[in-house]
Amino acid sequence: MRVFVTGATGFIGSAIVKELVGAGHKVLGLARSDAGAKSLAAAGAQAHQGDLEDLESLRSGAAATDAVIHTAFRHDWSRFAEACELDKGAIETIGGVLQGSSRPFIVSSGVGVAQGRAATEDDPPLSSPSLPRVSEATAVALMERGVHASVMRLPQVHDTVKQGLVTPLIAVARAKGVSAYIGEGHNRWPAAHVSDVARLYLLALEKGTAGARYHAVAEEGVALKDIATAIGRGLNVPVLSISQEHAQEHFGFLGFFAGRDAHISSAQTRTKLGWSPTGPSLLSDLGNMRFSEV
Image 1 (cartoon, rainbow, N blue to C red):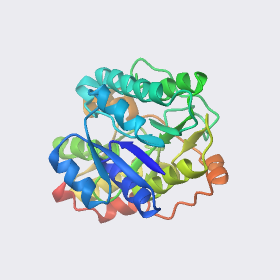
Image 2: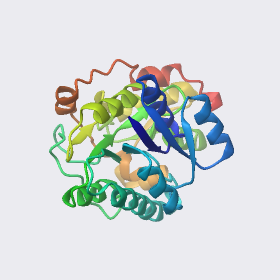
Image 3: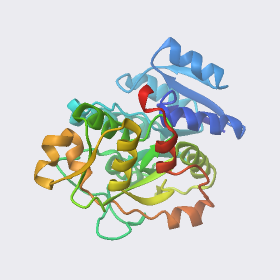
Image 4: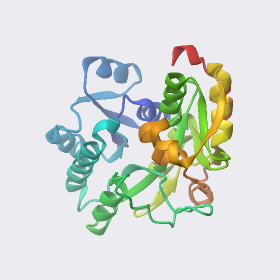
């Protein structure tokens, strides 16, 4: 199968490219620079020049392939709403090309779903003006138009270099000189190693169904106190609890997430796709990372 991958040179996208190529698929990867194109060539993929703002590059990439995996997103928290609109436009553009065909379209999203229990793939995404990412809603609208789309909900995806929202959490701890959590720190963040996530995208491509939601969750929830403790140990800074009232002041944009309990199940995903995560845990990767290089 010939697969168009957006975000192909990014943290998750590059791992997906490697997984696809290893499984015998041909990959057309979106690249913004010559350096990105070279890295794709080295991985055995073909580079497709363009970015999320170049809608024609997205159209031509989707038109030239049998399936699309969309992982690209502009992670600029100072212009987050703008980044979400850019993401929405990219998804709609690709969907317009795929409409009327049976070509798979996997759209990446987050695991911002129901709280208070282990949220499942059946739960709708949370709606919040503080979290305006609309990738999943945009994909659902395409499904209603007959596009063969599915949604991949991502947790904190990690290795020993990057760990999703934990990476900016480390930056806050370094800047503040303390590694903090809120209250008792029992709230949880789900996680998965990047190699397991890449393998799940491959399974979703080869075995997935239109309209499905998949949870790329290896660990249903890692306590924030444990994450903060690992960060404190790595940075050699104190670990302390702060109140919810001081969360925004201390964490900045992370204040919205730092107190949330995101307990997420991937039982349906594992059963439907035969996915069995085997990678290191989040705390293991934090314990093995070189904090001086981050």
